[in-house]
Length: 297
Image 1 (tube, helix red, strand yellow):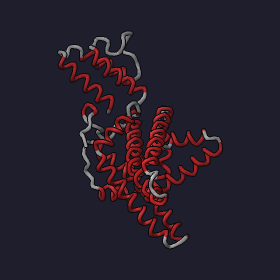
Image 2 (cartoon, rainbow, N blue to C red):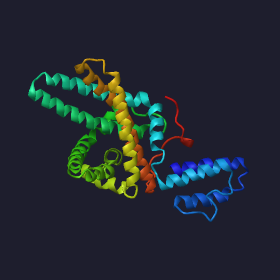
Image 3 (cartoon, rainbow, N blue to C red):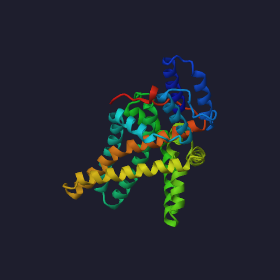
Image 4 (cartoon, rainbow, N blue to C red):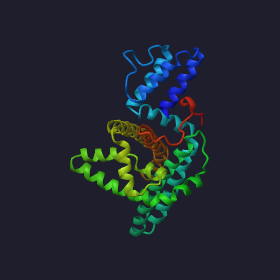
């Protein structure tokens, strides 16, 4: 989709320039899609400056399908903040209230509360991935309740895959660290695979690895950048809540940080999925807006 958008924008610009070099653009686009050079001249050599830059960005996108994914995620986050934050806040708040009430029942209640919190996290992951899939055309067609209802059938698959991945990744990190990082990378899109492709828990691992194959370093680098962003956000929120009592601070910071951060993580992971799918010729649903713009929230 990104490469097709590049080509569409460049073609529109060429029509303004007379369109007499469209054939050259077509050849450049054809070879850029295959990672080849059109001839000994730079790609788009006969074109004016702005269109050279567009074709160059298309070529870079072919080399790294995740180029600009964080910027796209941030743009979508701002455009659909009210919808995405509402989903995260309601699920986090409901889980926090239930966990708090169950904790009054002693040890057993606390254990049940932990299970509720765990499944709320699984539900939140699936709901936000579904919400991102929904808003990629520029508008939210599903309400909060409809979004949650749409992913309820996949909650057990999401839970199973998340638990298995968590166990394997933890073991890998404890042993030599590198195996854990490798598993984090190749299993980066198991939740989108389950929610969007309706895959089973076990099948999602193989499908995620298949999509990531050949782009592992790009996926790993993107995840590292997201991790750094999350650390910075956590530090800032920690400083903001520092003046509050510990009991209030812990509960409030969990709800607020989760509400703010979870949608962005879901956006990044889901967009990674779609970029990888397109890089493998999967196409998928129309994503984004013409020219890559998004409406203001």
